[in-house]
Image (cartoon, rainbow, N blue to C red):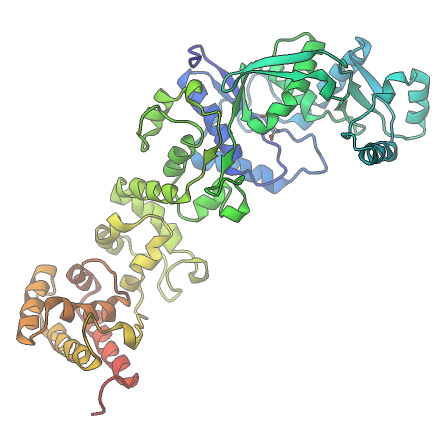
Length: 503
Ligand code: GLU
């Protein structure tokens, strides 16, 4: 099997019942890729016929996820198109008409079995250790009986008649031929008592009306596909090509869930991931380019994407790999773009992971631009801007006394180092990286310390951290006065911790 060359029409058809899961968005991504590659159309359709579970926030999150990942659609809400509306609740009449036609043609029937009766039926089946299934009793109801129920306000649905023997099969583009025995299936509802269609009927009518050529969807839908094939048969239409994409599992091989951490694209956005990195990573969930390449531009992925390289076995979500990949994307970003990405994270309130509230917003960009090269290589997440750079902005550096000594240094030696460092800091000029380095190295010699020993307490005093960007660049960026104050403060911390002998 090879990818279709002719332009496809594919659709992403989410139900706005919850914040879209990463697996759901991955389906949208595969649709988008195939549409771009074949110069076809990517359609977005909102499947909101389950009015009891409809959630406005979920709908908003769907569009936000698509926007964030740059999955632009050719037809759909907000975009229009020749086959609209692209929201199922606005297409209700077409579903009602089709369901009634199926009744007329003898493929479907009205059913007035009440929820209580269905419940009682299931209970009996459970007691008899039989699988719960509808028993087809509505097939024998007369139009008059249905009318009486209707008048009495009882719920009336329309069900498709499923032949009680035979089989249906289809060739899935990922898994090959799949066959289902019809005796396993019961007559299922296509139009609910609220006059809304079930997903089974609605999506088929819409896919047909919208000229969808390939249905790309999660493989949890495979078991429903025989129903869909039967509806196609009853309507006398050809099914599309089915492309069922594999499940996404956590590293422990369990289905990816909250337990594994973030499960929606928007959570990854908020955690400091870049859309391009998430896009790249998600493409590799269930697809591979056929070699070891992992980091690829959108263009490259679009060019290399093909259905025949979609795996039929589940994909594993490796969050460490995602973080690594995000780091690669951050490293490859030019500084001006990265600043634009980092600023909003650092300008958030302190309680949300931003710089201390004492730091004035907006952040001074020229200053930030000077700092970024010092940490650019080390950033893996946009949220790390704050923890990596906070000491450049905020003066409340407050190291613990026990963090100040470097390797093999006692409190006395640490104090000596900091005192010597303080004296030099006050007067050294120019306060520039090379000069600072030369001066502090000779100070180490004079005070008979290893450079590392002298520099460690200075680093902690100035940054509050044992790991920080190159010391002298850092000092130069922070400036002479602020560095002097911080070293002075650290000496005070050592003293009041009582770690230095009383003077
Ligand atoms: N509305 C369905 C869902 O959200 C669509 C399934 C399909 O793509 O056919 O999963």
